Length: 369
Image: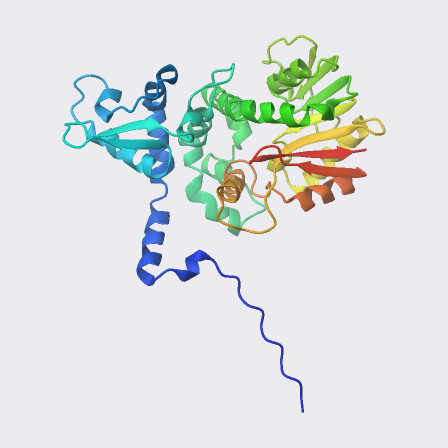
């Protein structure tokens, strides 16, 4: 008598599997109209709504009419945007029955990320604006081309006659300034978390090299917090460092990280590996390895995707950003799991690796030679 066949493995389920047909249709309707959310967010930022509500910390609930020039003919248009964003947790909605302006809006904790708090005056508002410039929005209808031809130009380049995003930034000063403010607005809170949770990781470092350091702002924050670092080397493309401001103790060095990287006791980089392929990342990491002494460290701060997929805010933010990278920068540039980053380091010759999760978005990846 033959033994019974093994039962097939149970299919993974999710909450979406438990929806009724009507609920499923409603969920798809929401997904189909999801573009309304970032575009409404972009609109209220351009209109100055978050800053007007915040008013140096007052954050008093205001009606739409109070957020527009006096005599505006129809504040209800803005109110509709605010209602949508309140449903997504950006604003809180306050109602007073029997008044002519019954709906008033204040910023939630999410909405307050749109208000500058750091020394640069940048915030996540700049990040929203950068992601939704006309030039970047034009790339999204070409996303399917990334699937059909993954080795070809990324959707942004396809939408702009073959010009990739970084070359576009180099040609358009305004777009480049928006991009730099966006990176600053995201970097400042992360760098504060890094220095609070990893400050001791720079112990024994006298010379720190920042690969892809742009203006040198992150390097300056590290050196201000870790006074034992005597010299900083801000390394980026020649045209980038040519525009970098003078910073005490920092040398701005132009070059190509695919050819050689300046030597230092430790190397720092943030959101560099994500936009390159595995082969390109290996070249970058090998050049970092060559530039370090025995026992030297590469400290790479990158988004790290979880091994399993869930519907948490963190996972969604990471996976959404991965598709943004695919669309804007490189089709085969990608976010990676912790294990994928570890394997890249081993291939490049690093013997030690650990990941520290000090921030919900960026992880600190420490490679030791």
